[in-house]
Length: 285
Image (cartoon, rainbow, N blue to C red; front, side, top):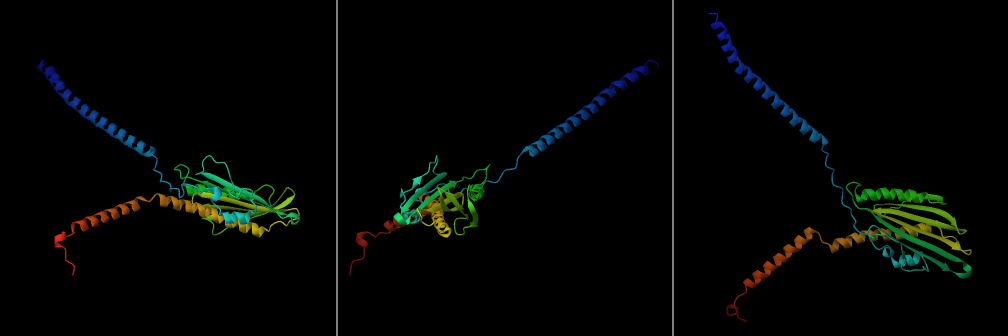
């Protein structure tokens, strides 16, 4: 009896070992599965938190080219504003890319002998802005530059009695800046019109003075001339876009033309197929 009791204890202990191992194994599997789920959840949360939201695409630029600055103002207008201009066709400014920036100027002295002389100077400049995902739309960038140019003109060095006012009817927005300036011992009247049309900024300046006793031109005449020329220059920008559209028809128009051609071909085929043999033709009466 004494020997059988220890033996029974050993048998029971051995039988309990597998049960404990199974329990430990289950507990270990359960824990590792939980850790995997936590890691997966953590990784998913990290990825979603680190992903940047997609930015909406910027609006395409309205204009992709600029007009020739020296032909942006009508010849008759130049002749009227700058009598006896040294170069009728104007003097083009330097530019590394005429599709982005261009300018032209005219100047002339109308000499009337003992009655004095009238000097006039006219210039026009274009700046075009492309749309950029990181910088913004061309129109927004042009609006920013337009504001800067207006401020720059208002702060012109030596300007006297500077004033700024809206210039309606010229582009999407326009401002006319007028002032007096004394140089070469003569009084000059200045008028600058800064205008924006789409993604293009147009800056037009017109000034004049009387020499050898001639009267200084009136501020009203100088402003009127500047606004007229600025309106023509802005119109040329719009015309350039229209010309480009005509030269490159849209995909929709191209499809319409293709369908017209197909219908035309089908019609011609039907007409040829419906022709009667000459023997069956109805005789003339």
